[in-house]
Image (cartoon, rainbow, N blue to C red; front, side, top):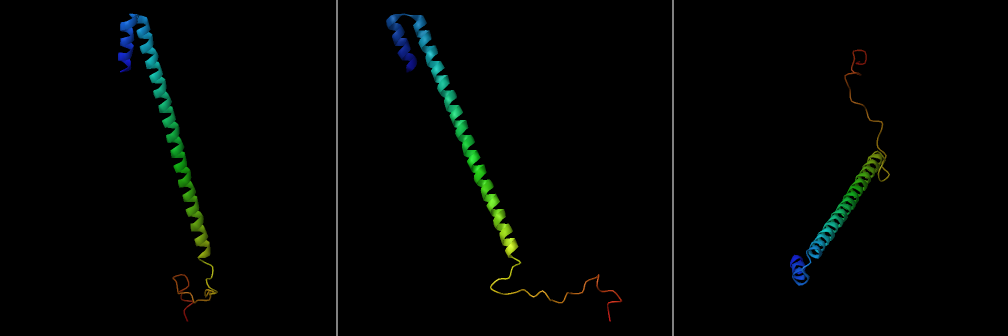
Length: 102
């Protein structure tokens, strides 16, 4: 459609150089537009990936913090209950020697 517009103009003024210059200018403008679109899309994609990676890293760090917090709290008494630390140990291979058995 744009090319037909340029050809119609050529049919009126019969200037080949004007036709060629118009077509060349149009293609240069088109290529510049495509380059700008590609650069913009690459920038947007990079920004998106960075955001996703940052969110994932934050979630990962939060999960480790929660795990460490739960792990540290696992040994603490709950509801005032103090765990019995004076339990009899079960016999093991090391403490079952002939001298220990009576």
